Each structure stands twice: as C-alpha cells, then as structure tokens.
Image (cartoon, rainbow over all chains, first blue to last red; front, side, top):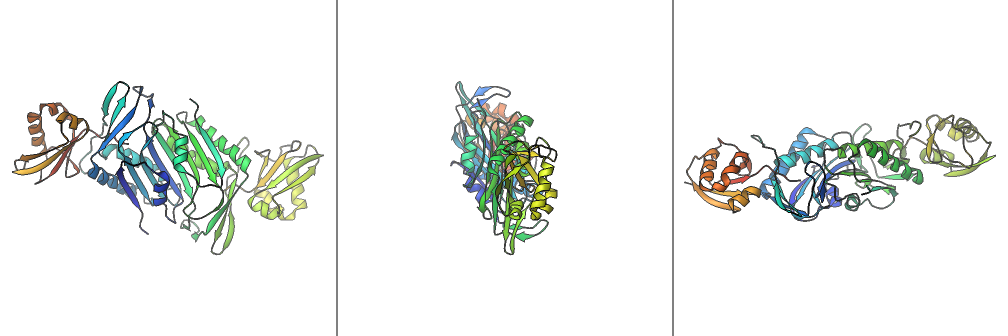
Length: 152
Length: 152
Length: 82
Length: 82
C-alpha cells in the first residue's frame, strides 16, 4: 500500500470532502485537518478590516517545498498515512478557506493532530507564498519573519 | 456576534465544506477539524477486518451531550468561535467519515487544535452512541471503557 | 406507583430482547433498587448490571439517585461512538 | 559569462518594477556579489537586500553560494502564505 501525498498550489476552491477522500485508505480511522481562511475583521495586534487578500506564489518551488513539508511530517510521525497540502492563490475574500493541511492515520492518538499543526507551521515558514492585504484604506504586502537555514 | 454551535446525530453524509462554512465568521482565520472513519483493516491490538459498522444512538440524549461537549470546549478555550459536532449513525462502510468535530478561531495558536482533540475525546466518553462491528466471521458490539461521573 | 419508561441500547437491548418497556415501580425507588429488580426479573440482564451506564431523563445517574415520577430511564454499556 | 534568470516576488517585485529579468553575470559569482551588483544597479532594491530570501534553482541559498550556470535565481521577502 502506497501512502498518498497530495500537494498543490491552486486557484480553485478547496474541496475538503474530495481531499479527505483522496487520503483515506482502508486502514485509515482518523483525520486531522487544518484550514486557514481570510479574516474580514482582525482584533489582535493591529486591529483592522480586510476587503480581500491577493495571494502570489513561486509555484514550482512552492510545490516542491510542500512536498518537503510532507516528507518532514512522515519522518517525524511514521503513523501518518495520507497527507494533503493545498494553498489557494489569487484574490480571496473574507471567510474563504485559503490553505489546507490534512493528515490521516489509523488512530487519533498517534500524531495526526500534531502532524497537521507541524504542517501548517512549516508551510508558513518555507513555502514561497505571499499575500497582499487590501483594506478600506489601501493595500499592503504582509511579510513573514522566518529566515530559512541551509538545507531548508 | 453570536458564535455558532452545531451539533447533530444524522444518517446523512457528513459534508465538511458545508459544516466549515457554517462555523466561519468574518473574524475567523483558522479551523481544526477532526474526522473519524470506518477502518476496513485494523492492525493495532487485535488485527481484523471490518465489513461495516452499524451505529446506534440514544439520539435526544446524544445531542444534549454534544451540546455539553461544545460548552466544555468554550469554557476551556475562550478563543473558540464556531463549533460543529456531528455523529453519523446507521450502517457505515470502510473509508466513510462517521464523526466530525470542528472548531474555529481567529488564529491557529489559541487552542483550535487542542479544542478539537478535546472534543473527540469527550465525545467518545459521554455521548451515547454505540457501534456494532460486522466482520467476515460475525458481528460484535464494541464497548467503551469510560464510566461517567456525577454531573457529567 | 410511578410509571416510568425504560430504554435499552446496544448489548443491553440485545440481552433485554426489547428496545423499551413501560414499567410501574414504587415511588421513591432508587437506581440501585431498580437494578436489583431488573436483574431478578430479567436474568439475562443480571451479568450486565455490573458494568452498565444508567440515565434518568437523559442525565447520567448513580446508585443512590431516587427515580422521579414518569422518568425516562436508559440502560446501556459504556459508549463507543466516533 | 553565465546567463541566469532572476525572478522577483511580492514587495521585491514591486520595487524591481518587474517579475523577472535575464542577466549575464561573470562565472563563479557568489550570491553576496549578485546582491551587491543588484543593489548598485537597482537602487530601489538596496534597502530590501538586508532582509531578503534568495533561492538558486528553487532551493534557499546563502551569501557564499556560487551561482551555477544558467541558474534560476529568485529574490523575495520572508514568506507569508497560509
């Protein structure tokens, strides 16, 4: 049995049902899925409103780095069966899911939650995607604060 | 803004896209979703194959206990915005999602993963649902091992 | 007398041979007394009474709880949902 | 000479005023030397060079890396996906 790994940058809607089905094997009993969505209203730190986000990606590298994130997950949690990592790009409005990380395993107590959490944290560190925030008073690129090390 | 809480026992397919949309607010930026599915092949402990599971529930009590699980989550993680808890019952075949717990919040680092994990653990302790496993060599009720305490 | 409804689920339903029954019990009967009564009248259930969950009006209940009038009682094994 | 392709993303793209350019550079040039060259020729980029990520052929690269022939180089700010 080969364990499925799905990774893609897409402009299409993220279909959770479809992705979950693709990473469910006959031996699978549990899935942890993380999705991020565009916030229309942000309270923490600098409170502000968002009209939409415009996502851009260095697509071939981003897909290679998603594959690397999946490989890192498998190295850390050998229990993981299927992995799906999808980043949606383009102009995305509040409440829209923009990113998904899903991990499946036979049981819920062998790392699925931790693996999904690790996956989204790593994606936000090393996968080359950027978002420009467009608000009522103008637009601004959002920058992360992580500097990859050698061999990342 | 009222925070949505969805809980139900259903015989219908669990639609992740639909449920996620229902618990996404303009202030939501993160969702952690757990789903459990029927394993056709189990390796851990007593290795065996499953043809299907037949789920039964004490429905009105189960829905009340799901509501209670949601309230417990909100007491522990004040950051949680929307909560969906759905248990599917009836005859369910391998690879079919049978249960879903989803929690949303503004950010991913304020407890969404922990809240979803807590939710599925509590559901398996106090929500009155049972499954009968039907395999190639006969059928058997699966019993849990948790005994609720007073006021649970 | 107190007219109650008893519901059975999962293994307990199979052993009782029914999903539910209406029963008349003395007022002020406790859960412990009801368990003894059922174990006597339905020998199939006797063994199950050791590791059973019981609810009164959809809340978990314990041996010393007094059964209220017209209660909905349920008997079932530890849950196994998910 | 070494013909390379340089890609710019996000803020760096805006400052460079272009998504990509083809460039001829001396053989054996390092990333550090390329950054200095770009900072001199494109003053808008000078400030950004302090906190920039650079890749060679889609892998993160650092100051002392030597740029291989026909490399695809990308310059961008710390990522902010999700």
